Length: 68
Image (cartoon, rainbow, N blue to C red; front, side, top):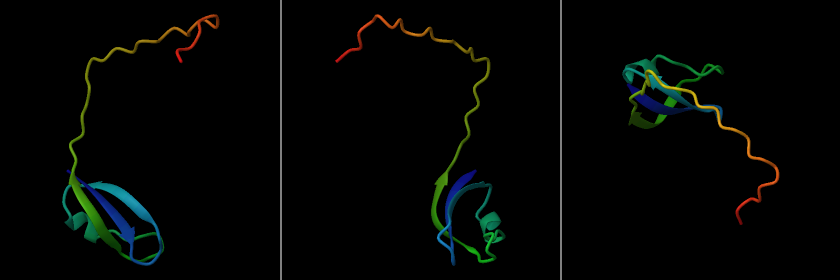
């Protein structure tokens, strides 16, 4: 998977998209109708955590001083 930063060839819109190949970027167009220009490409690997546990922290008592 690739993380691609694109900018519209007409308006100042810049967007980051996730694609499987650069061919997918060539088929996309901006909302204004102009095509995108690729600014940067980076490899992207999504991480999925399984079996995590949510721990709720207790609020700090108001009478404790904050560290300087």
